[in-house]
Length: 156
Image (cartoon, rainbow, N blue to C red; front, side, top):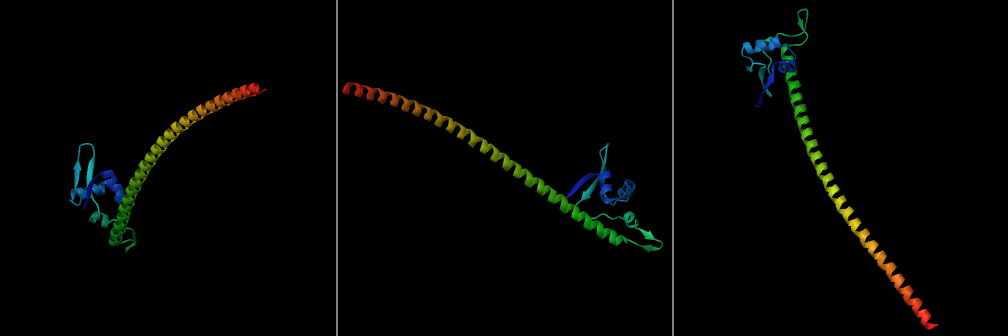
């Protein structure tokens, strides 16, 4: 089982109980805790449902009838925690997928930019060649015009 250390406030919030109940759970040995001087951390074990006697005693009552039994509350919490784990795992997978997609898009953007720069250079080269070809055409036009003018003058 994977475990992680969680601040007591977060642990209590996740269980939906007061911190005093969590501290009572620590005192009775139901959960493991450590204190680093600033914060108290509770060892949270994935896939393990912690419903101590203190929480089992917290049930809604209507006179002498239990509206919610402790067993039902325990199963409900187990279901909720399991769903929460799936949501967290799904969120992590989504973040990983989005990060991967962003890297892919970044790489594509860099490639497109490089292609654009290459094409820009090619266009500039072609423009230079076109300008030289136009100059050569103009030179040839002048040359042939001069030649034809001389030929017409010598023939007359």
